Image (cartoon, rainbow, N blue to C red; front, top):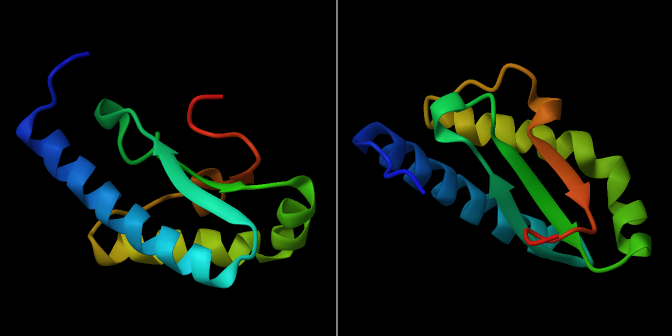
Length: 102
């Protein structure tokens, strides 16, 4: 793995902080949510950011789907507060059954 530059390390810290905050909110408000994980290529940041809310089963995922747009807006707002603009908020957060290793 290539070593991250100073700017990329700052980006990583920013994404981790936002992910932790969103994950805590998600666990409190969405039943069946297991974890929040993300994937990002820092040389293509912020366009490459993909945050995923992992659910324990299909029933929990289906129940949460109507709130997806609300959570996409929350992510976009949280990133904007940190000075990062997500051009298309719908591309950056998804609800899934898959984990980070799947």
